Image 1 (spheres, rainbow, N blue to C red):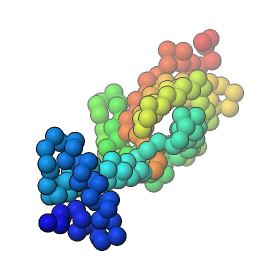
Image 2: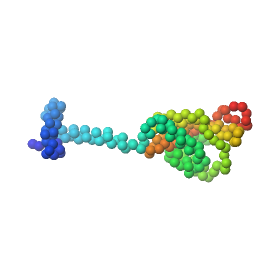
Image 3: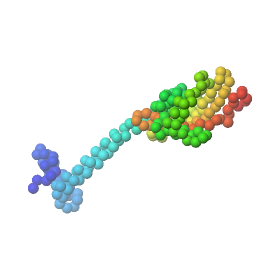
Image 4: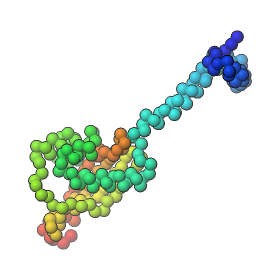
Length: 194
């Protein structure tokens, strides 16, 4: 009687199928039928496909190949964020859909923040801003950036703000999922010593 495995592999592979049947019957300690061998091979193939195809399903959520590249990408994103900080359209791509901003009055979502910004546009010219003391940590698909934004008006220090931003790597890009700021204790707006 010809086994299902022999039928599946075709006439050119009958010898291989016979050897597989013989090995399978030895490994299970009893005479195994071709159907049992076919089921075992089906499970092996299914497991192999699962293990091979599963990483492909999450391909876009893999971080860049090196932590150094991720750190550089996050610093560039922070600089871009600082440039478009008052532009809700510019922030649209930076902030993830589940973004939360921790502010003194509570937690606000991305939609709430962008809506508020559109209803209350920032005044014209703002102070010059730059970063100091940046620290970037990357944990796989999560990046955390801590630092200080220093605002100056001409040669006078206006404000220092400490911040923590949390990013997630999704769909091939880093997006902010959380932000929190607080004034630095070293703040000086009147030229007093720091």
